[in-house]
Length: 130
Image (tube, rainbow, N blue to C red):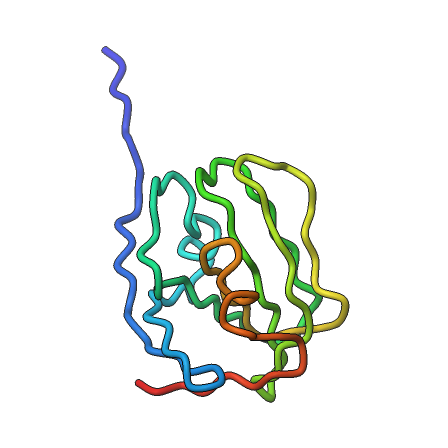
């Protein structure tokens, strides 16, 4: 008799509110390897003022892709001083690599076009509210 063991991890995200230029974004935090790897994959929608805030162990060039991501996103790469280094765009399902131009400690994903609509640009600083 052969037994198959299914291994999976339950991911429980914490929440964090972030402010950029007086706009508040309600985020879930991805800080473990598994949370970061899952990201926003398989979600069919994202609330208007919501996103995902990725926290890495140390500053490094960050690499993202949109495989299995069903909604288009804006990605802000953020350095250890909370300054937005790059704003990139990802299209649903695209497997092209999206990378930061220099080492970053954080990334913020929001709905496509959010940063432009709110006048958020490279060089702006994010603030952690709670």
